Image (cartoon, rainbow, N blue to C red; front, side, top):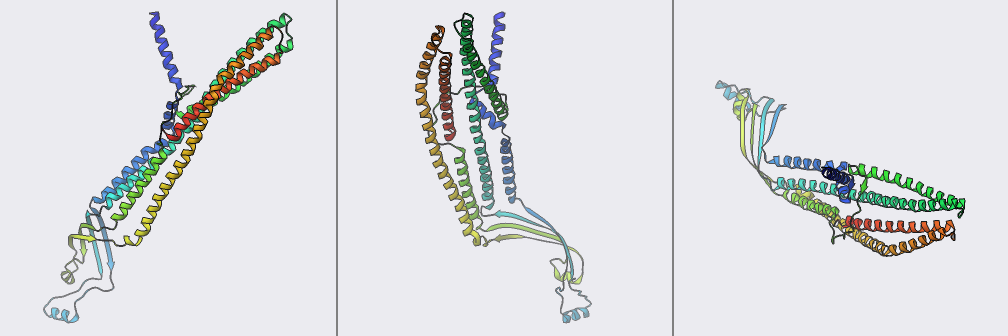
Length: 424
């Protein structure tokens, strides 16, 4: 029973630890989800769908309601001789009234639009894709900000650990000197010197812990989850190639230019459609009848219509030139990005190589500093070394360990910065 309880407590502690300790990838993913701009992804998709849907409604019958009242200065009328002759026959021909009225509907149905609606829908989709790609570029930059805070927090945690080790070493020397002072083999000033150095290290720890709390709060707010500890990532190798979202953005801009060019070509083709017109008013289509009376009547017309707007030719050359300019700008942006990206890769590769070379010597330097420090502590026990020399050797060993930590964290940061540069 006791074993089961202990196992349960151990499992709960491990779950709790996993909940508070975050890997770099987890922080990056959480930061992208938590970044306020992520809400625009759904808005862009929704706006694009609505735009495409509205364009597609161009295939539906287009209905226009009209109401019109007018007064004309002149209207068709019978010649005087004709009116006199009709008058002798007992017929009164008033002619059309100068005041005219109509209330009606016009209906048009497109049968063939030269591919204009389809081209416009594709343009709308590509415009949405460009906006999404631009959003991806912005969200991708969040990773770099996470990298900076994450590796800074890693470095602070290592420095705090080394600071604790240094405090323990100084405390051990302080304890040894306290005993020596009691036995009269060391001076009180030597003990005070070591105590002051230990307190100075404690102050450094206070500063480091304050900096860690600030970074933890910033990283937690940025990721939208509480981060108390971070896990040191493995020194993986970055993949070959380049898969940055900036390149996807440029590809989407090129596809948009192609879609705009197809829409421009479709504007030159004729349109074929059906139409229907109907109205209730005066005068109607039977003008002879309306000359004899002023009664309102129902009137209607149906037919087919072919239209060809050659006005698109006037601006076609300039419009194509603008699209080509957009295409060349996108291609130039790609060349510039790849050029700068290659330079960044070269710089980062060299930085990683430099830190790896430095790390190969760190262990040897620490081992030598450790031997010197132990020898100094041994000499102190025999009263043949100055306390200042001992403190110098202790601090030199600690400085070597700090340098080792910096080299390791900087090397890891360089690897993951390279992964950021290539997105591989």
